[in-house]
Image: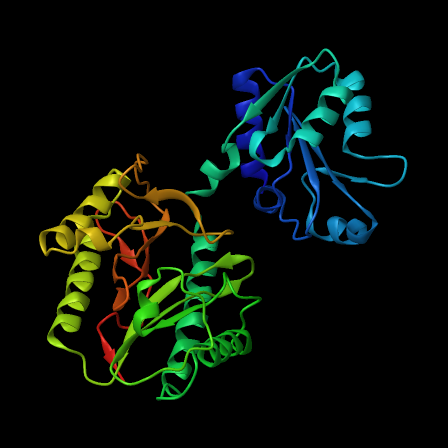
Length: 357
């Protein structure tokens, strides 16, 4: 935590900014270790403050030791605190997270910091979060292991007549039972024609024979997310269905093979997308190939046609190509990988070959 805060402070010194207000609660957790649901973080070139209300007063003392806690109450809020602090520190320039401030909050900030230059900054902490340390990677691996073990249990109950929602409920129960704090996102279970919906949340539709079922799900361990998609088939797949699955499988494998430090994220997307395009299904793959995962389920970098990130060692990204044929069926396969110098490390242990039940 000390090194992370120091990195932000180094940016303040470099940009000749007196302080920054960080309101994104995920960024606050990343920088301080605070796990509460609301807080404000004010970092100065040296030192800083974390503002919490009475619900978190004891908790913040247990979790945070790099900045000074401040109690928000009827007399003290972020804006009154900043007003007093600006006089004490003789602020000239103060930054704030542009994405985290609505118009009302920005207006209050202007009123509290009169005659002080306000500087909206974008993705200062989010860009730091892209590269994971060893501890973060271990937590992501644990979250993924929980999700995979839960999926093994669900495979045992797939049968004609069961509903998508029943499968989702069982999957979420098994993840919780095995140690997940919560689901990483709304669980996707989409079968038959609904499998052509990339974000087809589980419905009351019954599972029938001879159709694909797309499962997209994730667990959370100590704040860190996992994200996995597997497509299974119930019954006897047709030649076309097997062909489509194998195209997606090949597109995923080839993309994973080119991931390494120094590669541009759009290039990885292109490798996968070209395989799908060359096989005649390019119009049925509309989303980006993947995204970063960490304290949030969708983080930087993005693996997409417009992604211009240069991959760095210890970035954790998903690789999830898909083909979705409206009204008929869809296939997606998703792994999580860690970028390394020469070759990506695949975190998944569960097979991504077609499972027929």
